[in-house]
Image (cartoon, rainbow, N blue to C red; front, side):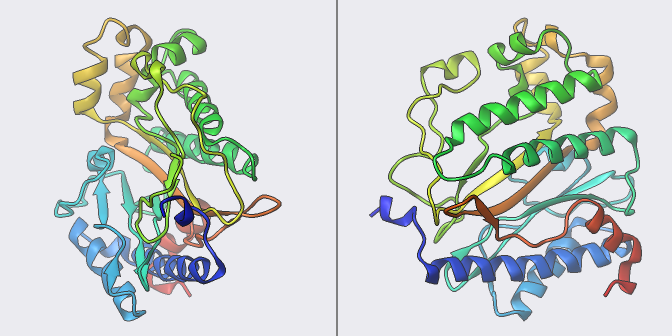
Length: 304
């Protein structure tokens, strides 16, 4: 039963596609109004209201509308803090349509322009992380190989920004990159937002204790199999101070003076729902991101 849910038929795909279309309209509604909002709660309200008006009366999961350092909290659902003075909003929200889920995340500046070079740099790094996966995504590719690739892109980018220091291979072997990229690349989407399947899409092996995953026991991408591709970099003050800056293993690879400039960025996450096809993939998520999203924010209520 679990394995049969991994491969979606045309009926299921169309419902996931429709869930994504509704989610996209709700994300656009947020972008058009974000410059006029003062509280995270307003983001949640307009997102849920837009979905309901399009007959998606349930969310696939609780709306995550984290601004500033709240964006570094993976499952932040308080959604009740003021937006004033915050650099970015991480909106992780997806509608459910006829029992099928979508999972969509977009991160954007409240003003429509990046308020700091640090925020823009991290956004571009996460874009690069996701794009490095998309160009390789096709049947037979192992998700764990892609996860390792993305981790190395993150390490290279954080080294270039000065957040990390030292040798890239040593940082990977130590697992220090997990301070900023703390979980796996993706998961299945279907009747549940984290859908089940017979073989785990990512499975931690014996090397997890050293900070990264093995290349064993990994489910490959298969046609009609919609995993969720994720790109993300977080600056979780609590987690970094608790597990990394206090560790002799990890702290030597992190430049605390440079890191101080990035706390206000919070975190950047981009998530799309991708359908694996015979020749590659189809992106079922149509919510604007990057420059397209920024343009909608700048135009505000004047956007089409």
